[in-house]
Image (cartoon, rainbow, N blue to C red; front, side):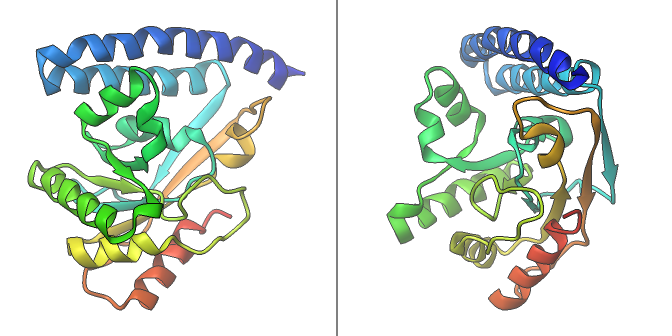
Length: 226
């Protein structure tokens, strides 16, 4: 009953203010990337505030977060970690499904902010575009974020990593930091629950490893909280 009451309050408050913040992000674009960056950070920070203060959840971080550009490979159990990325990391460039960029207002802001579209059905051509976009973000000193399983998955499941992850790892030549997160049982439901959402940052994986090895290490690390 408490979870239902918290959720009933959370939805209109978070999404109502979010509509305003997304509009502000669009209006901030003519004022430069820094203005858009602040607007996105405010939206993500608002989400974290609502999760903590309205849903009664705690967010715990285990392990070290590198400050230099790396590819963060994050477990994806709910929308929580996607919205929380600009709060968790410093100006991240996230690989996101291409269809998300068709969302009115949000999609345009996402492109200007520097998110990288992913269309799996376009094969090598899309991979080249993703690599080019990622290298531009790296040159700007930004961390990259990918959800290597490709979509949200239920807590406790371990689907194989998408093939594109290994291609990016090989072509970008930067370290990977796997990140486990256990948001699913609390956040991926209609009636959201209070509790603790944990991020666990794994050991840095150097570039240049064989595909089988890097996939095995990433899969094991991002599922450490399952």
